[in-house]
Amino acid sequence: MNDRTLSFLEFVAPGVRSLRPYEPGKPLSELEREYGVRDAVKLASNENPLGPSPRALEAVRAVMRELALYPDGNCFELKAALAELHGVAPEQITVGNGSNDVLEFVARVFLQPGREAVFSEHAFAVYPIVTQAVGAQAVVVPAVNYGHDLTAMLARVTGRTGVVFVANPNNPTGTWLKADELRAFVAAVPGHVVVVIDEAYFEYVDEPEYPDTTQWVKDYPNLVVTRTFSKVYGLGGLRVGYGVSHPAMADLFNRVRQPFNVNAAAQAAAVAALSDHDHVARSVAVNRTGMEQVTAAFARMGLPFIPSVGNFVCVDVGRPAGPVYEALLRQGVIVRPVGGYGLPHHLRVTIGTQVENERFITALERAMKD
Image (cartoon, rainbow, N blue to C red; front, side):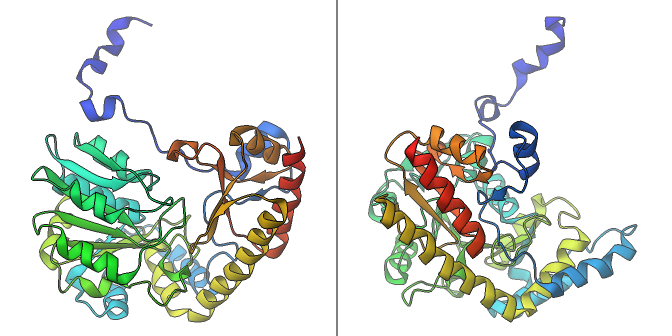
């Protein structure tokens, strides 16, 4: 190949040049190709083992007859349903192709070269990606007990800060922040700094002091709260999430949002999923029982783990986790190594069904003997 054909590389945006792509969990099809494994169990991407609501599936089937038509670019019905759920105006809702889409809107609108984004060590990998992609500087604050140190994060907010990202609960550690401490933090952040509270796992949390920060938006115009349909609602394959914010902020996000960014099937499925409270309750119950099953096994094996309020848990295997991960793959169990999050001895495992969890536990016991 002539070197001249690569001359465009000289003009790559500085933030993109050194950017590492997001690494998703290994899909089942890839495991089957690489290892020849059949009937594998995927516990790598925090998906709902029960799948979508039957109502959501029926809504998707109904939409299939109209696939020649563009979707509603304004997501009218979905915004209306979300507005009713949260007690806000539809103008305060921004719908995205997954909540990651909304996180990118935040970065594109409020970050640029010379500006900074503050977030915690061990935080969601998308925060540094969207920050660096627009040429802004990431300010990573050391974690405390694997979670956010809000006092230290506030101390790193300066005149250059454009955005502060807070995941509650945090992925991949499963740690969480109480209402009083988080609200005090939001109140203390200067009004010119946008605070993003990422609540992707909100529906799984069963703690009396855990806040619903969508109710704080009326008091803090610089606050954005993001949620997703990829977790408890089981719609990860359709990619739909949203943000709740002040109408003026939502208006800015709509200026950079791609037209028709949420497809028709995703919109219909999300509206239907919101109405199926029984499916959500079953999903949460399965997760609660499964978390007890998995963490009891860790305790039995003498493996420390990070207490989690999400639908996943990080376990410390006491050595570099790569070989243990590979040993699990050879047994047809996919989990998630989290060395890229600064946790080289940990594996993150999604809570599955009772059968899936037992398959993982048996495989882990074998892997730890290797």
